[in-house]
Image 1 (cartoon, rainbow, N blue to C red):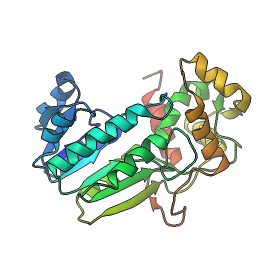
Image 2: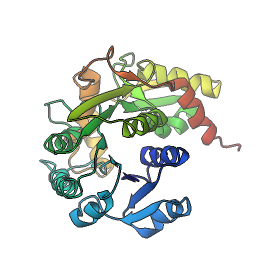
Image 3: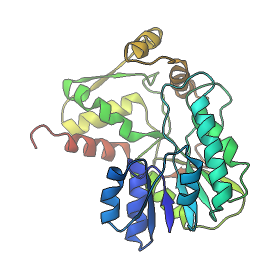
Length: 290
């Protein structure tokens, strides 16, 4: 039995389906019963637990072969990340009480960065996990290729606004299917202590590469236009953010290069899905003629 948090999302759901396909038993951890119904139909054991409920998480993590841990993203954190700290404390108590034989945490590229930024969410959780008495793997994927789903309509119109600048600056990106495949493999392994696995796609990509990929998928020219850096704060606040600085600094980190893998590109694990393939699938899924 493997306990899966974040099972209603792309990565967690894919990890669960991978395990089920291997004949493994899965415990689906969801926040409300309605979200667990589809997984119950597939034969999963369903446990209702929020990520900061120590008692419920302890029950969810008990009597398992391993835990796949995801924490809800906090895109607009209060200063000091108090919710992330609270969640990490609850998870620690649950893990130490349940004592699963291993845990794989979906972290992020740049989780080791000391500079304050949005990815400190992952750093705080990683710092907690390093203190556990059970074997832990930090899986640090690059920028999700699926983030480009928000650009499909703009690509169809011919111009994609982008925060990733300079336009030819390449960063680590990876498809969620490759993340799920890697997480599933890690859950099948045995190790001791804490280890870090950093994952990206077969090569690195820039904003220009995103435009070229969309151009090929759509069969028409697509350009990218940089969103001026001095407009970001007002733009994010107009979208409802109360504390946009961590998000701004995260983007700065990618653009300036201080958000990257700790082991570097040469030693990172490589997925098989190319950006071009992923963009074609996004365009196909949002085909207005279908």
